Image (cartoon, rainbow, N blue to C red; front, side, top):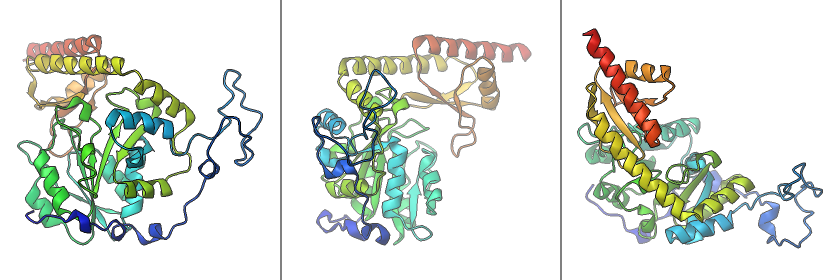
Length: 368
């Protein structure tokens, strides 16, 4: 990739599906009128008498469809305008929306780099999109720029890059990401779900520089809010406007918005937990290297470790299950032969995990 895109000539509309360009979006009652607490709302067919919940009486109302309060909190945290922020019901909803906007079923294709997050392919298949898979390099799990260049054609609409990558745990080289951004005329989705565990800086501060860039983040990982399903998209104002046009009207419920706002206000506890995870990751790295059947612990910029267990990954996996410890078997995934993906737990959980692994190594030794 030697050429460079002229960002001033980037034409977003040329990438959007024709039926999406011509769509007349649904307008919810709460979009039409600014909500004031003292107002009388008889416009959305809500139950004006309230819910059976005696302790709260506002769950009978629909949530803010644009999540303005939550976006303001994220805007303060990330120093990004709310006009550049989209909130999804998990990052999976945002991935789905991106496919809906930019890819024509049976015509266009996306490009992914396995081993990587599985929903890029699953969502693409659901939409009838051909998903081109270009494996990461075997040595360091990096992008194969030459093969990417040779795979791009007029039907290439979306490239998905996960950095730090799941399940390998490594950062993708910044210069390779910028290479693609500068030379690909389609949409580049950079999934930064694990960015808070990395020493690398987020690309979210480069959305003004790259109009074809969509950065995904989440509150599920470092913020510990997987249960409320909050995904975040950062992109140009124009892309965000299209996302808002085709999303479901009330995609984020009141409870999720409230909990997320409360959590984002508790930064001290967030940083304490983040520091603890990084400390425990180092603890696991050091102890895994002492276990005989673990042949490699891959470098990680995430809250998990990918470990290679030569010829024994299935047996170790089953042994841990029998002891009520659940990890992820990734041994069937390309370039992850004999590998388990292990999330960083608490010190108690990690000590128990290491103890059981040592016990298993002794069982193997006694059998020999």
